[in-house]
Image 1 (cartoon, rainbow, N blue to C red):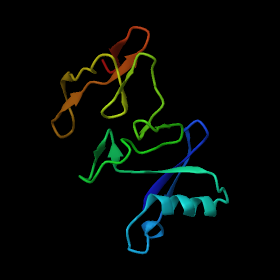
Image 2 (image 1 turned 180 degrees about the horizontal axis):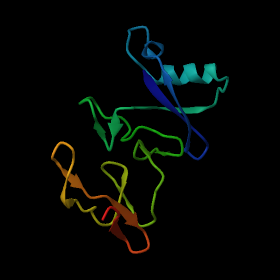
Image 3 (image 1 turned 180 degrees about the vertical axis):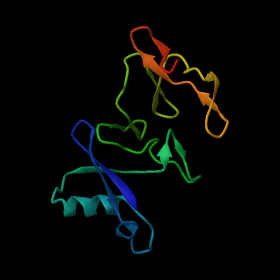
Image 4 (image 1 turned 90 degrees about the vertical axis):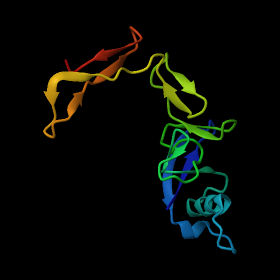
Length: 146
């Protein structure tokens, strides 16, 4: 299946749909984004709709199955398509977070700590990782499972 994101006039994703790969193939059997776009415009009777193909397997500019990453991130409703970066970018969660230009993901101004709860293990005997939540007021990570 191929996925496509419909954009509004501000390049905000309003819909994400899947299309059978066979629909995208040209006369030589090669998949073409433009064929998928034309199919969706016809299907929804919206000849001027803006559609961009997106990859379910791409996150942070990496294809999780080892394939070729496509447009940095899988599109979601509310994401922005950035033409200059040819990337889908999620809404910014916090004002202090900054966009990583390589991944097109939002990063906190300080790295999240990785700590483990002392003297506690899972049913398999593995240490239990602490849970933190970002605090925008203090610009820090708060431990929430102590």
